[in-house]
Structure formats: structure tokens, C-alpha cells
Length: 296
Picture 1 (cartoon, helix red, strand yellow):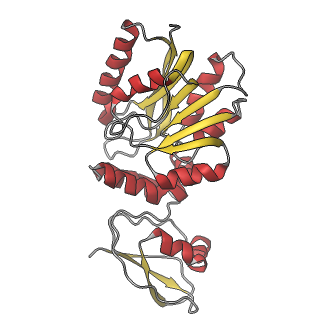
Picture 2 (spheres, rainbow, N blue to C red; picture 1 turned 120 degrees about the horizontal axis):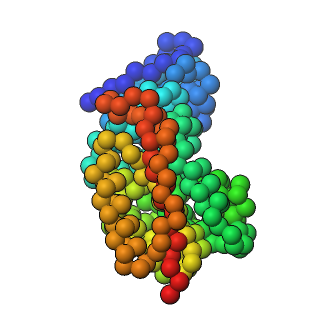
């Protein structure tokens, strides 16, 4: 059993906090106390129990073991440790479990990470799209909590369909009110639940990288796009992702040679996000790609 101690307390009342999201949600007083009085973040990755000092009026909760649960991160080092734990998850089920547990705190953590992919993608699409933005239908693949839709809405787009593998992420996205439709799908393991030639814009950020969505998924993205529509994709340029990036770019070029689309933009972006690998410091760079599907 792995036990993690907690922080920020008023007295020495010791309570077992099960690493399980629904229990925490049912204990609102406990959760609020942790948020209000913690002096630093907590990460529960591969732990069985967290012990936390709490006011005397909190009831002792029973112990339940749950691997890969993440409660809260407030500093870069906490976010870094959480993402490093994600990279240790090798199966699809483990990754989904991680994202399910991360959903509630994902938005605040990517701010700490200074993650720019959603805003870069939205800006890239906006700079080239000349159609009716309010009427355009955008497919947001690996939509997460909805940051791409938020960014694109600020550019005048208003109709979004989201797809993600994590039900908890989809729940947060649903609560945003930005999406007309949301679907759960494990990209690369299941067919993309989108009709061919249906979307004015297709966007995928964050998922095209080693250990996540296989690069061949870009063919499904192209098929889902209307002739003359745009596909915007991003990937990282850090050392651990270079092989994946090379494979992705070969596939993109091959599809262009097949007459499926034309490359409109491929831009290397510095300061993409803070580096989370122990082998890298500062910031890593990333790439945004914009392709236009050829008219049939």
C-alpha cells in the first residue's frame, strides 16, 4: 500500500481520504476545506490512501484503493509530476482513467503549464477561414474540457461537435454549454464517429503525440472534412516526440501527394508549453499544421 500525507490543517484530527472522485464530490465540506486551506497542491498518483488533517466535525471516511487518482495541482512541479505519471500509463484504460481523474482540475493545470496549443490552433484557423463563422460546423477531436471551442468562439465560430475518450472530460465540456453535440470515442481504436464530408473545420490539439492517438487518424480527420474545409492539427517538438512527429509529417505529405489536401501552413512555435521531462528545461516547441481539403 502506498500512503500519501496531506498538508494545510487547522488541528491534528487525522482522517483517511479515499482516492475516489465520487466520494470527494459527496463530501463537499471536505473538498472545500482542502482547497481553502492547502498551502500547496496535492497529487495522488498510484496511491491507496491520503491522510489529511481536518477539522473535528469531519467524519472518518472508509479506505478504498484506487490507482492513478489525481486530486489537485497548484504548482508547476505538481503538474509536471502528474504528467510524468500519465506517461507511465501504457494501456488505453490506464490513460482514460487518468484523464477521467484529471478532468476537474485540467483547465487550471494547463494554465500553470502555459499550454498554448488551443489558442495557436484557433488563431491559425481564424487567419485563413473566410466563410460564415457562425454557420460553420467545427469538429473538435480530443476536445477535452472544451478549451479549443472556447478559443474558437472568441473568433466568431459558434457550432461545435466534440469527441473525446474520457467521459469525465466530456462532462466538463458539456457543462460549458459550447457544444451542440458530444461523443465518446477512443481514437485509433474505434472509427471516428463523424460523417464523411460533414465539417467546415476539424481541429485536433494535444492528442497527436507519442503514446496517445496514432498518426494514421489524420486520414479520418480528412474524410470528415467538407471539400474546401480545413483540418488543423498540432504536435510537440520535444525530444521524446521526434519520431512520432517525423511519422506524422510523412503521412501528411503522402496524403498531399495523393491529392487529398493541400498544406496551407506548417509553423514551428517556440514556448509551446513548459517542459515536463527531466531531460529538458524551460519550454518545448510545437508545430501547428493547417491543411485544406481539395475540392472533389
